[in-house]
Length: 307
Image (cartoon, rainbow, N blue to C red; front, side, top):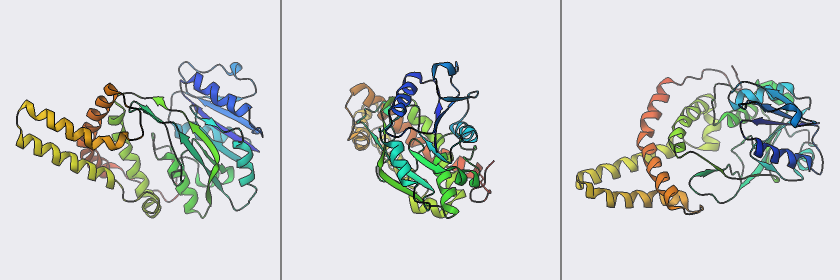
């Protein structure tokens, strides 16, 4: 029996879309558990046939743990309230779990082309373990203590996968287990909010250093390199052109630097300008946040240890 867990937060239209996709499955799930921390909360009677667990506003880690605790299935499949599983998602998950050696399945997540003011998760080759398309045996989840609730957002799903892998479990990547993630509009301040993600990266590295290096490389390596380049460019222009006119060539260089981020995205001039400005500020601040979190984040818990 497969239980599907969906954290829901203030997206009723998107939630209705994913629930419709689950109703149209070629093989229906055993149950669907919606863990809701919306304000105002969802009305359970509006979703007949579903189990709704209601919580005060909380993190996705807490919500998913509550969903797992309430689930009756021996396989737990996770997706998000803004995703759309393929019609054969449950059928293909069921087929993969017929192999008793398979502890978990990481599916393929696709996304549309996006503008800079939009976000969607994309996972085409595996190794990222996003919970918009991830399924695990409930016994494995219970063995590692579920999600580590110290993660506010970001890397909590990778942490769970690393905990399972560190105990000898096998999580396979299945490119025929499909979930589509339509883009959603994000705040212009989102690149600055991404600075908080550094904390999660450092915590994950300190808990699982070898797995982190194998799957993700060096902690903070890419961010530090980008920040160094931005600081050097900024300093050169300030020294060479200490006048307002320096903003013109500086803006051109910064635009070229961030153009690589926008290769596959629709061009919208206003959004592009805002994205570049806020991303530039984020990269200037990156070393300070990295140093602060490196000094304060401690994770002495053993592999799989949870709060």
